[in-house]
View 1 (tube, rainbow, N blue to C red):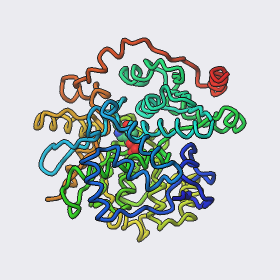
View 2 (view 1 turned 30 degrees about the vertical axis):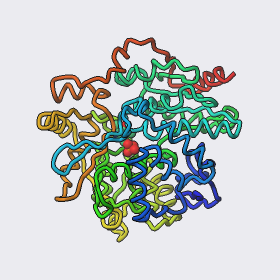
View 3 (view 1 turned 60 degrees about the horizontal axis):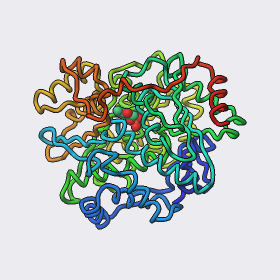
View 4 (view 1 turned 90 degrees about the vertical axis):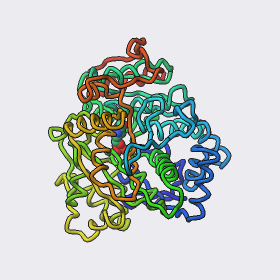
Length: 475
Ligand SMILES: *Cc1c(COP(=O)(O)O)cnc(C)c1O
């Protein structure tokens, strides 16, 4: 299986070549040359694999279709080591919970940091360690986080040989729980850097350091951002696992609603659907930052400025542009790389928007690719959290609430709707308190986490100081 860039670079790459890379050299995103088709017989066989051998075995079946440069026995062992009941809280890994008529929640948030990003990041940690050892190399991951991504990366990479993590975050701006999760890690290879500034300052520092090519090469600076194909691929697995749990036969279809920000999660659903998984609809749920909802309603993709990017109570969906969206547009345009390069290069750079509304291809976004969308606001989140609690006794987090709100607008009789639960409510306790007048339940392993000793350095928003810090720690 070879990988190509959405902007046309065709130089043949295999999975492990792109595993440790970010963007393709031409600025595009990597995608497999083709999506492997899953026949009815294979899907039936995978049902049995999931029921008899579990999630890790299913993950191996799917991953092995796209990874031909890791021996099968090694890949199987990496999956088995990643998807365990110890790490993900249950043997089913992603159990389905019934909410109400036609509506289910797929639990993706029982990993170490209580958000769905663990599903992919835990695998990435093991893949990185494996591949770096094989090459005799090391990697310094530099990232910026406002919460979920950074902690998922740190919990995935902690204690891994050949990897260090330098994670910047805006000083004092994460929730006490999120700060405690990250800063209480005492592993020698994890470094927390609190920047005196906002999240954009952190991102600017990461960009500045990465643009210093000599420094980047000398210190082997890498990233683990959401455009990494390995993360997307890992996420494809839980669409299959969700489908298998929601159905008894392959004749049945299922729809998924996905709380979305950077379009990484739902893009994995798109890949699963392209492989032939019987998904009826992929419902994109956004919060007030409705870049994606606007596109699926009108065909206009309009990147927001920072003044136009709202701070909301589902903060992990507060995005100004959807960094994985280019992958879907590439497919929508019939894999026309020249056109994709023009839209995401010159057009977005000069106009900050493009418009496919008049293009006949845009109509296919819904008809052929199953995409529809909806939007949810703070008031919707509060109302949905309250309603789901009062009627079903379940407490859901704010992002999942955005999903449930939008999913309910798209229910169809006889068609199961699975909402992806992307975080546990304890991570966003303040809003739960606001909705329910009480705090959410806290998993026992997090009791007293805020009182643990913290390891973090505070720094001004200055890329030079961050570089000096990295240099000192790599000496
Ligand atoms: C990252 C995140 C999202 C958004 O996922 P994307 O892949 O960026 O669309 C939604 N909910 C939670 C809790 C997250 O951490």
